[in-house]
View 1 (cartoon, rainbow, N blue to C red):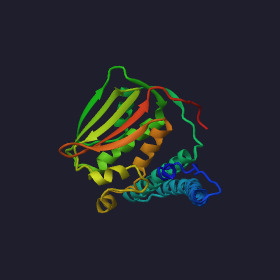
View 2 (cartoon, helix red, strand yellow; view 1 turned 120 degrees about the vertical axis):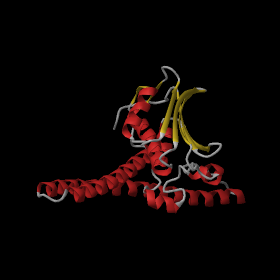
View 3 (cartoon, one colour; view 1 turned 45 degrees about the vertical axis):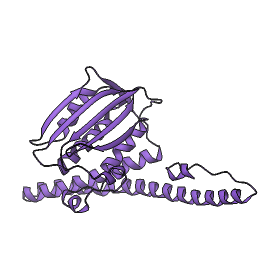
Length: 262
């Protein structure tokens, strides 16, 4: 029962002819129903996300046609920003659903961690925030570059959303036991201790009022966790003394499996 409570929905309790066996059978029926509901939810999320791609493509085309028709640029820029925001949300939903269903393989290659950090910083504008970078010399990891880049850009984007413009940011890459730890730290407002375990849950947002102002549905950190676990690793968050938040993504030095994109 504890294994199912911890997320192993495919596990079943022992059954038998005695009272404990009857209880196990009843528990298994409940576990099967829960597993079916979760599976259906994932399939629905994947299907809806996929179907939304077509109307989004049409909207982009309409924006281009409006530009040719001479509509004022400011209005078009606002429309493009809205379409881009919805497109990003759909992409996150689709990626998450595929990973939960186990239908997506990792495209594994050797990655120089310092280069990966540089690509992430080039993709996210941190504004005037002070940045420090510390990477063990020549640190290399075998992983899916595109998805690890997604991990870092999600974490950096959260910093842009939830920290003041004068916050400091630190990126650290170092060996950690039998793997590599990639850390993203800020000295912003931080997160309450009781909320830390839920940061990686889908649709969980810290301080709902602030989240409404900054946007997002709480999917970014869920993807961080999923991508880390797909590599056989893990993601964790901890508060920083004096304020701030550190998110650590630990990845094994050697992946158990590797494959091409499907």
